[in-house]
Amino acid sequence: MKFIDTNLWIGNWPFAPLSRNEVKEVSRRLSRFDIDTAFVSTFECVFQVDPMPGNRSLRKTVARRRRLRALPVLNPGVAAWRDHLDELADWPETKAIRLLPGYHGYRLDSRSTRACVEALQSRGIRVLATARLIDERHEHRAVTVKPPALGQWEGFLEFASSANPLIQGLSVHELRALSEFGRRFSADISFAEWEDTLRVLKGFMSTTRIMFGSLSPLQVLQAQIDKIRLSSLALNQREKVANLNAVKYFGV
Amino acid sequence: MLLACRKSDESKLGWIGVYGKLAVNLRLGAVSTSIRGSRPDRFALGPELIFAIELSYASPIIDIHSHPVFMGEGRKRSEVNRWVARARRFGIEAMVALGDVLVHGDRPDANQIRKINEETARIVSWAPEFFHGFCYLNPTLGERAVLSEVDRWVGQSGFKGLKLEIANNARDRCMAPVMRAAESHDVPVLQHTWSMTKIRKRSQHSDPEDTCLLARRFPNTRVIMAHLTGCGYRGVLAARGIDNLWVDTSGGTPEAGIVEYAVSNLGAKRVLYGSDAPIRDLPVAIGQVAGAQLRMSDKQAVFYENAAALLKLV
Image 1 (cartoon, rainbow over the protein chains, first blue to last red):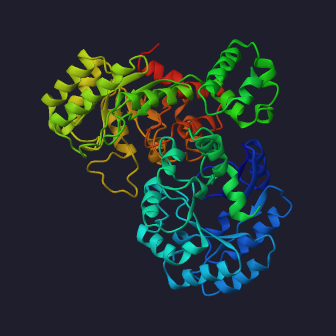
Image 2 (spheres, rainbow over the protein chains, first blue to last red; image 1 turned 180 degrees about the vertical axis):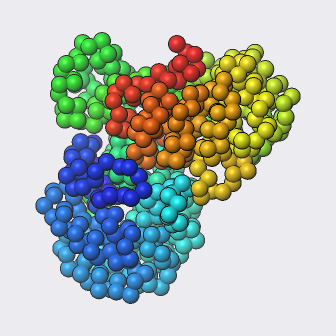
Image 3 (cartoon, rainbow over the protein chains, first blue to last red; image 1 turned 90 degrees about the vertical axis):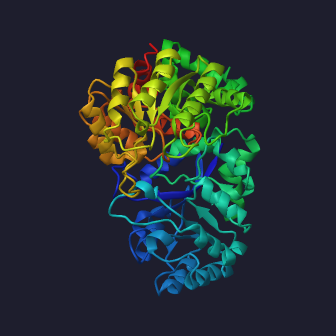
């Protein structure tokens, strides 16, 4: 089973003694688990207000890596976000943009986020919104980031659902609650977990809207792969989640 | 045999069954040279076989932390049968059933405790070769209530341990009768533990330091500190050098690095595989250990040997 990873990270995470995570190690890992394509962002963008230096260095780093597609981060909480978007949109490989509302400190239902989503949509660029990178119940003391509350996600979807945003890092409970809101969105499985996760998710959202996202290196890649590979859903359903939905979504 | 595997639907039970035969062969050394020499990560059949090979080195598996019934779901015999079949598919040979511990809230009364333990006993009776029951307790109910439950379920019904959740903090005085009862019956105590760095409900929840203090206060009672990911690096450091303490890998998403850190600091003999299913997904919980950068002998200890010794299954 081939995989497309929509939630991969490169660089060093400062709060855990993880093994090296530069492009060479990442590529080796992808190859080992049959991950054909991975959309990758850099941790450098998480902790800096201006994500562009990180985006630029990421672009250079992955330029000649067949499996890796740069997934730049945009921060609509800073005044220059339109300039940043102009630059990113000029990069022909830009298929999608990641938003990190928790780490960059803006509301998902704010006017600037709305303007940002509309600008992305008008340029045909996909919107990925990341709820969390670490379980906030035991995140490092130095970090006080909380994922946006459900009300914010609902406010976000009021204007963003026409763009079918890919929401990453929500739990099964959060996804169920958001599904009840009745707006269109897609989701990754990075934080969604319950016994036989995919079957549980299928109970309230279509498998055509679920995509593989490993959140590697913060999460064990094999465990995330096995969440899909060893689900009790039929093979064609698992393949949708593993890669087919992402092929359609990103046009890769 | 391998071609037959390839043609079959990989979701069927037969896959792991066939892998199981491979595992036996591997352990007997019959095909060990070809498998070990062929770099499993490049093996022709791809990741499904990698999973099987990695498990085969470490299998069988004992899951020290599960809740077959959770918040009232999973009570029917057919549901339990499905649960057992799915667990076996992943190489799990035995599972500790901890009871539906939160169905009546944080502090269940004596009747509610009794009902939870009765339900655990019923589930164990449906698959006695697979499930091992732990007796759920609310220490705040006092010594008489605690001893009554322990005598009934451990003394008379063969439960293999005691389970404590969030009725109180592990430091509290009310823990003394629980720990003495565990010592007298020679069974381990599994204490829910999670870092309170952000949750801040320490009056009822136990920090790793609280559970470690409990183990130090009662050195003759074996303590399992639950939820390695929730205990975090600080919890692992707190657990160093406590001979009667084990930590289980259950709970939390499969965060990278923490299993390796626990093995490196505590030794593989102190780490137990656990899932916390159905809150967690069985293959994900297994994958967190199988995918950790550990020696195969350490994985075997974590997956099976330590729990087998602790539960006196060998």
